[in-house]
Length: 365
Image (cartoon, rainbow, N blue to C red; front, side, top):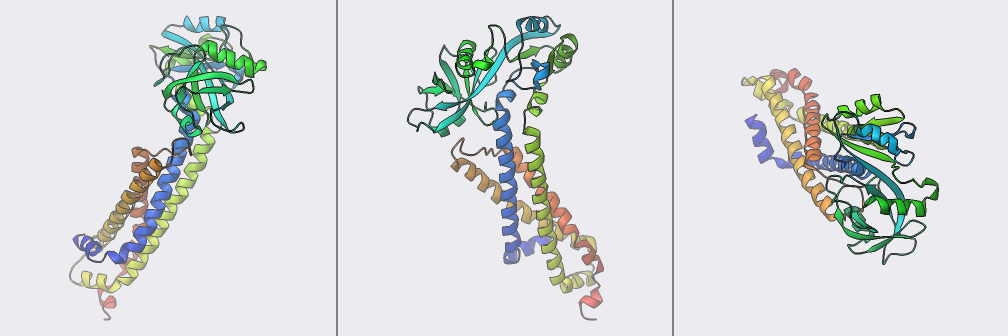
């Protein structure tokens, strides 16, 4: 193993090509993973931010805010369930917003939310006609104090501050009080107007944790209560995006495995005579193979470190909201572990050649 490390130090040129290719693969793997995380965050932020144990929709809404309607008597029934501590109304209307200084057709995609219980990172509801804006809207030129004209009726909303990670289906969140949300909804979606006391959904906080969802479903007719995780999975496109990107990430890892396997297979052929000498002086096959694995792991770690630094710099250079890229430490670590597994498996393909090296034949005897 020490011999393998010394070779890496004294003859780095022999490994440059493999290191470059592995670095490019690692950058691709981490970038695609960050893109997946960014897409999921931009689609689910508003739901993930809810400090609740369950979200309640009407039974026929298929977990869609826009199709759901919760009447006041249903809310009262939910509030009466043992363990329920707080219930708050929640609704959204998805529209385009005109931003001061932008062209008339250059609209920002927004979701105007009306809420009673403040989500994580969102202050209490602002005053009438005001809203907290998600930071992703900075990419559209939105600034604090701007008056956005929302929807075809150009309903005015004044931005009073920023919140973070509250997008929904790729649209930046605008968080307003319930009356402001109802006004925006009625002015721009007359077919979706809700009576006073009616909400699209309810968020429920309880002393029983996630079990409250099952309690609500068993005690109240005509509703579907989901835990936060289940509500996230029910958002259209989330599961499909995860499946597609995970398949792409899997193929990328396989490519890394093939590259490592081919490189060390060729390296083993070149070293046949050297391995013959090592075996002739008493080296065991497992010792030689351990050296190969060590070199593969070290090369992969170097490539992963360079790639990790590169994607972090890339994430810093890309303006927020320009593309849904989110680079996290967990994603870099996960990608590195996958590449290390690929390195070990890829280098293992050389084991057979190492075992077949005969000292006499390798030395020309």
